[in-house]
Length: 281
Ligand code: SF4
Image 1 (cartoon, rainbow, N blue to C red):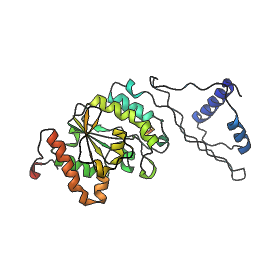
Image 2 (cartoon, protein in one colour):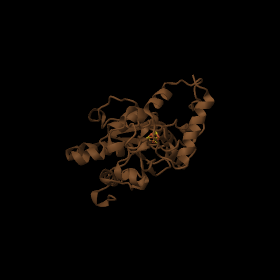
Image 3 (cartoon, protein in one colour):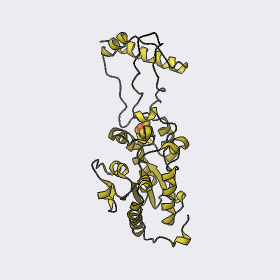
Image 4 (tube, protein in one colour):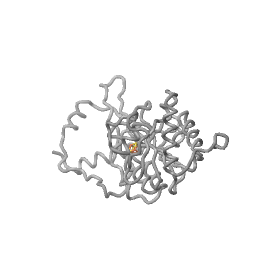
């Protein structure tokens, strides 16, 4: 067992090295293995559900060794407990906290966080996608790439401007190589979206793709082809699952089904799609 003071002192030393700009260190593998085998004499305090916003964790450190030395081992990605999303009273506060969030490993590869954009005051529709792609990661806005342009056309076909709806994602940081977010990453990030929905209070939600549906319903085995086009609920808010625009770009015949889903949304809202000449495309 080693004392908590020694452990904390070591952590403080590492943090001061990082703040001083040091990004690399040569490590003796044997010493690292011995340190990792040590046990600390009391558990570190954990941030709980009611915790106040935590201090942002330092940036990840890449550990490398000179060519002549024993190859060093990369440290595990830095993560830290997320602050309690329910503590945040405004969407701006949430966006600021998301920018500092390190609750899952996606924080290590993001360029910018993507909290969401659009009408923040009880919009008729809130669209929820999977996660940021390359373009979204670069700009910090959701659905701005090719799939986003198609979503904008779908929104216009419904008779809305993009600014009249709210658009967000299940995870706020880009998964590497646009892979599907892991269940643990969805679980870590969902409190942010839940708080956004609670503040925005949309009249209905549209889940774009399987990942969005899984995150919003907790049904992690759902198949989008089976659940789409049928009303579900997220809490007390009606939820319509449909295809993700990226899928529609890959498989155009599915656009007809997606449009049927969006027409059901309009029907629920007591609206009809505008004539093509009057749509806001
Ligand atoms: S994906 Fe979500 S939970 Fe993970 S680091 Fe980004 S904001 Fe935090």
